[in-house]
Length: 536
Image 1 (cartoon, one colour):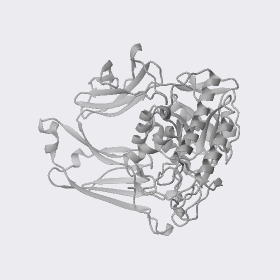
Image 2: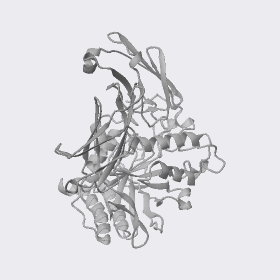
Image 3: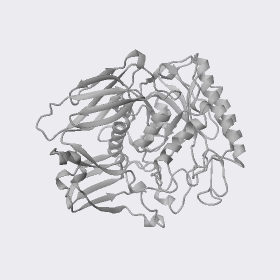
Image 4: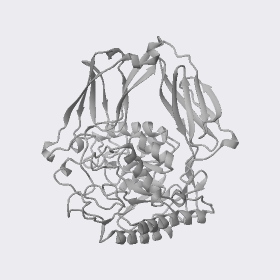
């Protein structure tokens, strides 16, 4: 996990060291035994926040940013059959620094409560070594925004002076049968047309994924993609988001992805998957991942289960300044680059409420204001929609693709326009406080406190019915939230992920959410397939 919580806020550790010693036996390297030339890469999933990496006494590199991965080539520094030493230095000021840090708050250690939580520091995602050939695939880019083709490119690294090798692509169906092959040069964008009989689109109703094998010389990687489009179209009263050419109402959870035993770090891969699985269990089809970038395995589960993701940029929650801007922009670029291959991600949220956007003005150096941040997002990834500011003042600038309001506890009625669709970016926050499940006894709060989980279900069903009456112009809604988080006890699940509701109340909530999605589809003249929760 991502470290131990100190006994008090005053005891927070901002500077830390990690040390690992291990033996490496190149007899485990089959290619090297055959006389081949291999490279050894050291990968870090994410380190919060600034790190310096030392290996066997040599400084290999450094990294700034708490949410993106990086790797280093340790081949020439690695000893065989003797002890190797890895040292990682980390500096993390958490919310005392200028960098984006999401919902982390040091004072929550002493004074939990509100909508910010106990911080994480240091290594919070997986660290691993990888053996690759001398010429290997460093990175891939997948553009799957199509109903008939996928465009792929591969970054190839080699110690040779010139890379002349061919990159081969092999698309396979779920049964492992090859559908089509293609080839190109390293770095070249190759568009692969899927034969018509084998075309099957990705959606929450049918999250179909193709396997994609990419090969360069002796190196081969297995990836996947899902054919889908997501763009703006015209509805009866303004713009709508269209998935695969059809309007699909997107009803989802606000998801903090916080865990009681690891804060940022989930205890297991099954725990990562579970938070995605509960979305269709409650009849929903979307997650707004709130002010956090999760490990890629989380997005894999969303891709596989068929849950749409609105990806937030982590904010500098309080005290954003001019010093925040370059750090924010760096992390924003890394977020788009690092999660852009996932079909589940269809929209980016740049700012949230008033957390950061006012630091972005015409006097910011380097030059970035709110309008230029929207332009940057569209430049970096023109295949996804952009939510400028969820529920904040910059939403009133009416740039980007979404008119996104927040309304607690009861949902209000946003309006679309000729350039934006309407979304209730946050509402609800209904809380039944379950005795024995609270982070701190008798200290929970919610936007709307109710006495029992049944009362919580009753209140939610009424809110869902109100949203259902607006589906001729409202296109998306986000309920706060998936789980209780520390003392914010307004989740459908307790903080330990146990369900607050009875089987009957869970079914009532599921039916209320499905009624929204079906009513919207019917109003648009779209026939929906059976939802996951109806057939499982």
